[in-house]
Image (cartoon, rainbow, N blue to C red; front, side, top):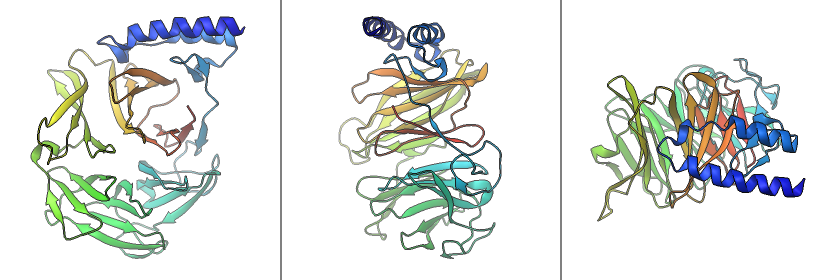
Amino acid sequence: MIMKNLFLKFILLILSFLFLTSCHLPLFQPVIIKALIAKITGCNPLIINTWQGYCYPPPIIYGTGQKGLEDGVFNKAKFGSIEGMVVDGKGNLFVADTENYRIRKITSDGIVSTFAGSNDGYIDGKVLDAKFNYLEDIAIDSKDNLYVSDKNKVRKITIDGNVTTFFESQKNDYIHILKIDKDDNLYMISGLFTYKISLKNTDKLSTLPEKYFNKYLNILDSKSNSYRLDVRDNRGYLAWSITMLYPPDYKDEHEKEIMHDDLDTLSYEPTTIALDSKDNLYLAITFNYNHNLSNIIKITPWGFKSIIYSVYLGYIRVLTIDEKNNVLYVDGYNQIYKISL
């Protein structure tokens, strides 16, 4: 059995390399290979890591899959609509539950609670008395203070339990994306502008050049490079690309394309991207002809690509990586999956 598994891993390595270096990487569907692994190892084919040739532990699932507002143990809790999530230094997960106007907290032992918010409105104050209007994204600084986008405002939730209005756009444009870099600079991305403000010196507010504007998704690596996922219509087809943008003060190159497809991609669509602590990039893709199938692709800083996870019963909407490099994602039913790779 050991020799068979070793031989299988070797064959999978060669096959995966050939497929993953082709121009149609996301079209590779390892169904036959998964079935072969399942036959030899006895694994459930739904949770097989095709690239490395072994079974994952079953994912931990937070939420019942039914919309609602219910705290408690991980498999009994209910969420409304999760639009963003971050992990603090203690391994606690915080999610922006938009439809319930609340920030929900999930501890490392799987207990779900309401961390901040009550009903629809706009009130600062103690966390459980505060009111939010339209939560869209969430970020965390080096001291574990939370920042959430709330229409044209950014609300700050301190570790001692107070909610304040940290920033308000005078242009009244909604702030869709929040990111914080290693130097505690906060980036606030709206449909028209990208603002940058130092959390150490809040008087230092600047507007980034137009190329940093993006209504889809931006993430930041450890060097403050910005990764932008663009999905656009190209004469009836979906064209997409991932571009790395160097910081505005970078003197030489300004951007670098990481991955793209301008061909007939009606069959699949990138949905979200994330970075881990080592600047590995993760891309989630769903297949349009069957929304039950999604892949997560890992792209190393030196450009090596691999399919690290395939799920046949989920649509990946929100993706993040925690400090232990566990993958956390939200599916179409607002359940949160935690996978140990």
